[in-house]
Image (cartoon, rainbow, N blue to C red):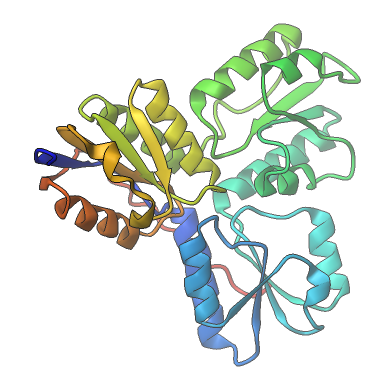
Length: 308
């Protein structure tokens, strides 16, 4: 039988302000409109959230053509390209933009740099919806760089006129390596101090602190959640066995064999009720005390989006 162990909770964890805004936007649209409410792609990357909203009446689609003229269409927190916005308008859809305001600020940076004639580089993951939406804010070519190897090979039209932005849900250490290469190749490169959102950074810092006292770490979040995967990577880089789980059903009893402290956190799109479920599972399998770690209190709240 396993000996008892403490349960340590990261702070902050779970929903960020952008995710809360996106979910509130969908719920308000469902309350205000008798007609169907459609959402283009997943509003946030969490299967439990998607199921809950779908059960409440939201209809998730992958293509704008699946929505009839005059219906309500919500753009996800990850943002969309200008081409998607235009196509939705051409189809006669009533759109609601739930793009996270922090992602929106990155969009404006790309538009500004491009308008000034700079080659724009996005440091981020290929095929991620946030990166695709950001790249699509201008009509010309935008370069996407996912690692240092790609940074070494990228070709620009004028090395003296290069600018960059980053995906908001990256790990700071990963960005630093890529940025170091870019700055060496393009000394005049322009860009922000950081595009990594405050909530992403706060959660990564909380995991580092949690790792100092934990034998294993559990990150609650869906497999397609970028910020949740980054939390898993941070934990592992700290030398602690770290597992990404959708909910308590993913936990394997062998993980907690002979442990003294289990650390738990959650990605920015994971509901707190899933963390509660994991805690209950732990308490039933040897957990004796739940300890909330000290951390930054996030007080930022964004108002829900409205029909454009």
